[in-house]
Length: 75
Image (cartoon, rainbow, N blue to C red; front, side):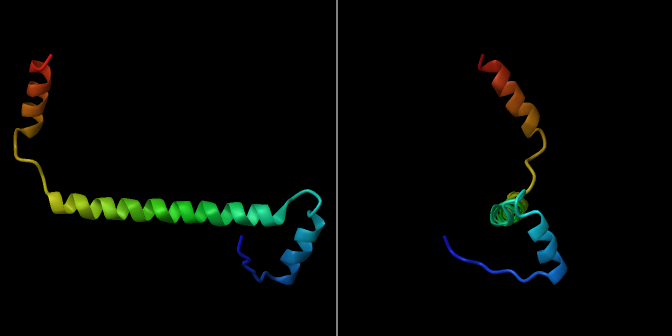
């Protein structure tokens, strides 16, 4: 693992010390960072998908009905 240091206000560190027997702060901080990264990755994936869909453009009129008809006829 790599080390990342974070500066927090003194009062935050004092409060963290009050709960160090209850909370595993390094683990909580890791979880928070990972959660934020996953959120950012999902947002990026959505933006990229939207860009791809914008390039495709709409389907020609009647496409949905044709595809439904083809599917029904294939059974």
